Image (cartoon, rainbow, N blue to C red; front, side):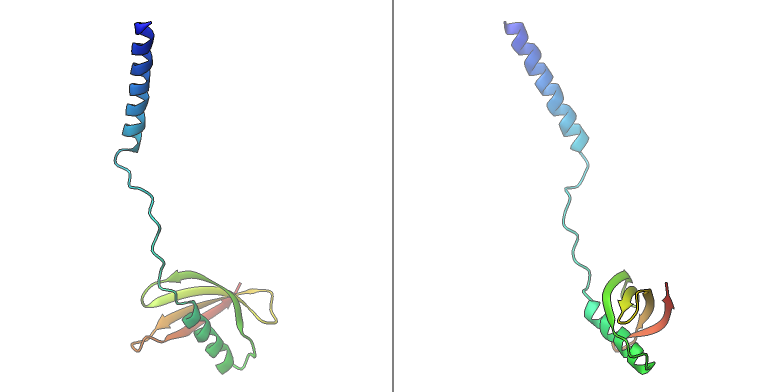
Length: 105
C-alpha cells in the first residue's frame, strides 16, 4: 500500500515539475496598452481633405493600419462608395494630421 502512495506522489511531483519548467521564463500575458487614440484626428484630416477636394464625401468605418508619431495609414469607406479608400497621413510640427496621398482599393 505504501508503494502505491510513493508512486502516486512521485508521479504528481513529476507532473508539477514539468508544469513548472514549461512555464518558466515566460512572461505573464499582460494587456497591451492602448495606442494613442488618433481616430478622431484621422477622421477630421480625411474629412478636411475630402472637403478641400470638393468630393462631397465623409469617412466612415475607419480602420487604422499604421500609426506612429509622425505617419499614419488608415483605411475607410466613404459615403456613397462601397470601395475602401486608403489614406496616408503625416503629422506636421503643430501636431495636426494632414493627408498626403490616397488610393482606392
